[in-house]
Length: 227
Image (cartoon, rainbow, N blue to C red; front, side):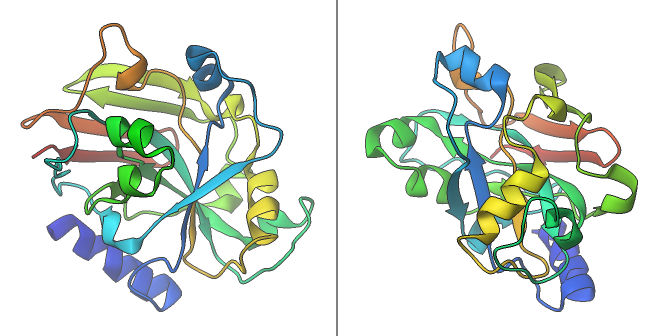
């Protein structure tokens, strides 16, 4: 996968490892996404994880597994950790943030529902495309107020703003650091807004030959074919 080579080269240059040690993800973290499901807002961030095998880069194919009949893309702002930290306060959390990039939290929805937990549904190879660019926190601050869009074959499915996050970046970093020691190069995927395929009427699933684009204002556009 050519795109992931760019990602691993960037991580090796910036953080001395060819992949994040941890890919920490957050579920149900946009008000509009909770509303489209009729879900109660969480009292604290809902954490789960992906493994580095899921990483891919721009231009790499999202491979649809035969075990699933409905795979979705999810547009996500990803926080890139730049300094080690453990149990940092919310007030100090941005001191750990190097910057931000664009990620796609690909999800096998039927497996997510069937399993009752998310490891398999979100863990397949190629299920975490990431843009190999880190927009510095010195430019984007706490990452709020950025337009975030998912386009499927040039049609916008998700179109929101990171100001709609239920828990903002400082809270997420502080919360995660109470569980894990955060290390340079770790990623925190901050959740996805409304409009994902499974909640559309009728539902829209990824199909071979599709192209998914995730664009975040101030960072760039991540594009992947579906195979």
